[in-house]
Amino acid sequence: MNKPIRDPFKENFDTLEEFADRISEVLQCPITIEDSNHRLLAYSTHDERTDQARIATIIGRRVPEKVINNLWKEGIIPQLLKTDDPIRVENINEIGLGNRVAISIWKNDEVLGFIWAVEVDKTLNEEELLLLKKAATVLRNKLLQLQIRKYKREERSQEFFWKLLTGHMESKEDITQAFYDAQITPPTSFSIAVFRFQEDIMPESERQISYLLKTMHRLKIILYTIDCNDLILFLSLDSILTPLKDQHDFVTFFKDTMKERFSIEQIEASFSSMYSSYDHIAKSYNEALNVLNIKRKFPKETAHIAGYQELGIYQFLDVLLEKRTQDHFENYSLAKLNEYDLRHNSTLVETLEVFLDSDNNINDAAKVLNVHINTLSYRLKRISEIGDINLKDTNQKITLYLDIKLQKYKNNPSN
Image (cartoon, rainbow, N blue to C red; front, side, top):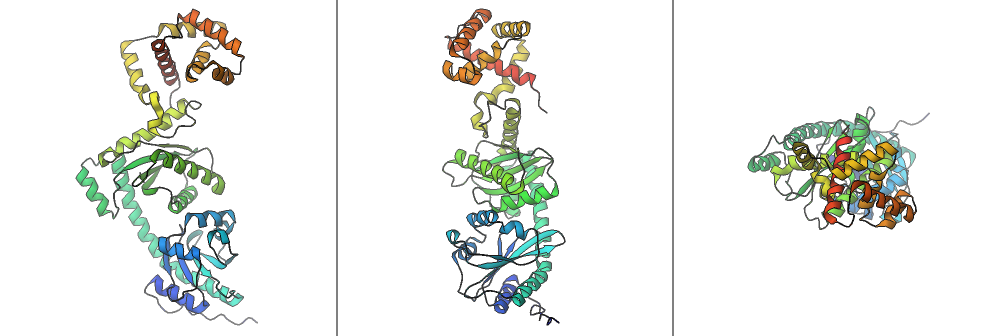
């Protein structure tokens, strides 16, 4: 008959720090307590024995991103998200992680946080592992209270963010005050990023997204919200020397990690220009949405584009189309080529577009079209004859290029 395990955690503890110290005393090893997003909540203070990963966590108040990524690759975190039993972690020297035991703190089917016990000069035995499990059970209610307070703060922040996105707060002074009222330090420069998922974001995916956003240390996320299948982020660009590159790296890492960890694929991403005035937040949001709209209409041409400033002429297509419509303008040369393609089931307009997209480089265009250079040369000659086009006239080529894009823009409505 098994001897009943004593419960050294019955007494009340005023703070999580006291509780971390108590677990450390019982198990005789350093302890850290984290929330579900690996932010440090408390750590035992009276034991100097530790490792580099724990030191970095305490200094940064959250687990370093490289440690989190490695624990995912090693399958440790996926295990912790499936069981309430202790998981033993062998040392990983390249990230300064020594031997330790981790356990998840659960409420129903949701993980509220984790306890990590560093095994310095000892290995926890079966009885101590059961005690660690008791500690996780006791912590559940304390973390649940923290979570409820966190949700209330997040609800207020979401309402504030939507007011900014929709332009319902226009006064710079009011916006700045609202930031401080929400205990958020406003950035001096920022952008809006949007990730568009294939389907509406459901609660499970929302938890996965929230987890990833709060464990990424690449760009500071001031606020975020979800609108059906869109994830909308308010990013700080303070002290960022290469904002365009860093934002590209950020969206690429997010998409790759969502695919790798959670098997969520085909996420479209965009981000706005960089701004410093808070009354431009709604404008930033519209820019990010516009990028997604253009990417949907011109998927091949804009496959490498994510930022609004990279759109080039695509920024102005809606304005140009409105002008063309008001003027009832029709490009004579393009109309002749369209008519010819329709009658002869040919692709002269596509050929011309690829040639212009390739900066008039006949070799590059031939590769894209998968035709011989001589074939392309003949087609270009026919295009000149049928459309009465001088392909050496820069002005004509630019006008044709714009009108081809406007034609595609008009004929490819948004979903």
